[in-house]
Amino acid sequence: MLIRQIMDNCALHRLPSKNPGDPRGMLSVIEGERDIPFAIARVYFLAGTPGDLVRGSHAHRALEQYAMCVSGSCIFDIDDGRRRESIVLSGPDVGLYMGPLLWHEMRAFSLDCVLLVLASAHYDEADYIRNHAEFQELAR
Ligand code: TYD
Image (tube, rainbow, N blue to C red):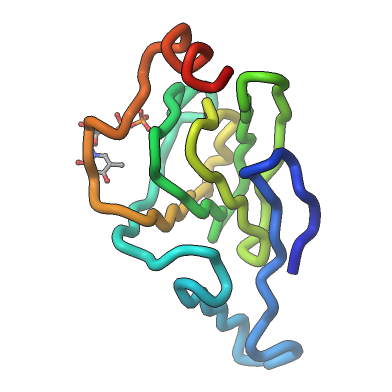
């Protein structure tokens, strides 16, 4: 369910619980091409990130990603070349969809933060844009 369209290719979603009210706890499911708009090729997660560290600081040429804090919280700073938005990711039922050409930085990791990311393609360094000036040229 869409919470907010942040930019053309960036949106905040709420994942419906499969077992609301279950005393055994939460079971959350994400199916590629159903709950998110792409087939999942790769899963990675960040944990134990120091709270004062900034990660990311890049954009992707084609990769689509879906990020959620399955534990704790962090802040995403997103820039589409026209404007910037800061999004607090908190809670395992909220996910951030990011399409290509979004400069992003992650910061303010809580001690218990586990940031899970689903990606549409295998790792490919050639898909990374790590130079902000180059990103601005491409995003224009
Ligand atoms: P990197 O993307 O540089 O981290 P950040 O998002 O902070 O810029 O990734 C760190 C290292 O991990 C780098 O050597 C590349 C490697 N890596 C993989 O091998 N596979 C992956 O899926 C990812 C995300 C990173």
